[in-house]
Image (tube, rainbow, N blue to C red; front, side):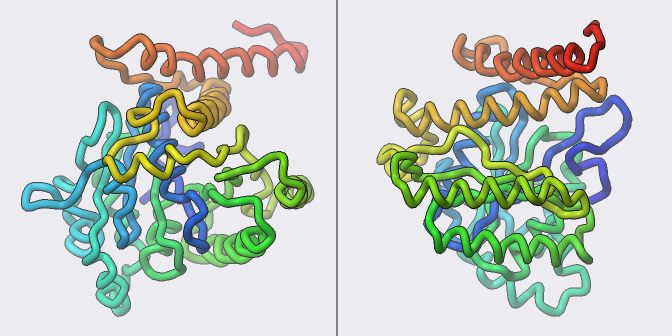
Length: 328
């Protein structure tokens, strides 16, 4: 995939697609829940969003109530067969998914001898160019050919994690992996930051781990050559919430299953904060973010679609004023 699908790039005046690898080599940290919940929140805010279920467990697909069939392709068909046209299934308004399946486990061995084994997903996304504003890739919790496909296709990495000491050690190894991939397979890959999942902000241990992460990112900010020199701890953190664990079994997102639960509130607020920052960056470059809302959308969806854009405009206005310029 060329720069047209990378964040922060693309033809002048054209909104780029942000391709984000959601990655943590430790399982059970909220990676898939974060992938699906952020994707759903982006879609509710009027952003065309694609979820790539790259994990053979196919939990993201189950979470959205989608599975491959004779009429619906899968990530296996995309990576091994090169079939892009029938693989993206519209699961909700503005939300598509390329489903995972258990056969994907065999793709590791099938890819082993292929000369282009790490570029298959990138080429598949090339074939869908221009259809999406965001692509979120749910990577497997292991480093193999599938995960490397995700990292080569992506422009950035977001790390969902719990604020535990061992998880912190795992983040260090993950950053080493990003550095290696950036050094050869994908020179434009960056780390955007960390999403704290199942978080207990009152726990002393959690506070210490979060402080360590923030200090690390602050020191990296002084090293512009580092892939994570602009990384941050995204806010708000996602509180532990049983509703987030229950909703996948019903094939529903948290916004459908328990829209007033803490999990829905936190992911909605996190998505708005992310969109606000990203939209502000687009506006600074003279690009107006696109919002896709059908005429019969609910008032809540319309309001969600415009909140981040209003925040982005306010941020740009403040930036102009702080530098002594007036906003137009």
